[in-house]
Length: 358
Image (cartoon, rainbow, N blue to C red):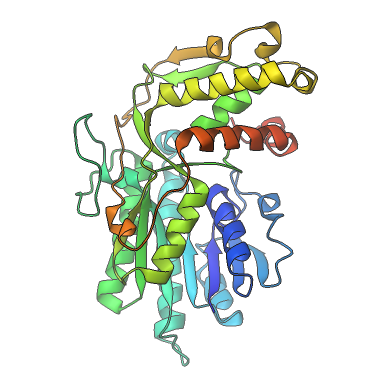
């Protein structure tokens, strides 16, 4: 039986992982540690809170003593580390928070894990520190380049990706220097339920529902490999179960699309939904869809972001050899995501009202 500490478990990917894990492994202990910054909300964990082994702790990963206490008190043997500052735009305007959380915070966790699992009176031989990272550490690809593999050299281009690259190297170093049992996964762009509305897919959905324009960087030609968050959770589960210690595994969705393709697909699906669901006009009176406009008429091209990487693409062949397979194609996944946002208006409307998402 695993006893997990999930850092950042009240954020988008972390909360979805917790939901998945308590459903698939109801006998396990799951302790969530989250600082509840702007993108983390305890309400994201409503589905999991009634699980018998679930515990929530409001705290910061930089508090090494707290992490040590949690590892000892709950006799935890696994850390799944999601906690991170992750928005590239925010890293450009305020990089300090990314250094503090992504580098110093990761080191804090590694120090605590080493002390409790390797240096204490009761060492824990069967332990695991799993570090969740991003494809952005590899830099960018040209249109004709092969997808990133685990052997792709690191070439981060933003303060965000640079901070994640540094944390990846720290995790690797603690394995090779101290013998900590670690694995790392680098994922492509996630989407799905509880996705904070500053990111592309939920931004487009919520802007269309509230009558705002859809800002598109440059010409919208930047390409991303889209991974449904539930497929990501399944990939991490597989790494924890079958991954080789000290190894890195890429998790991707085989869903490469330009940003404008993603936006158009959301627009077309909302056009279809609006035409068949008259009650939405009353629920969302500010939406321009009520005027008979096509959703795509709200698209506005804006100046490109500084250092905007052209293309990311993940080759997950290494993990596929362990049995991984993405289950969501991007069309079905986006449609399901739109339905989730339509059904959880209070969740995202509260974020917009409080100014947290803009």
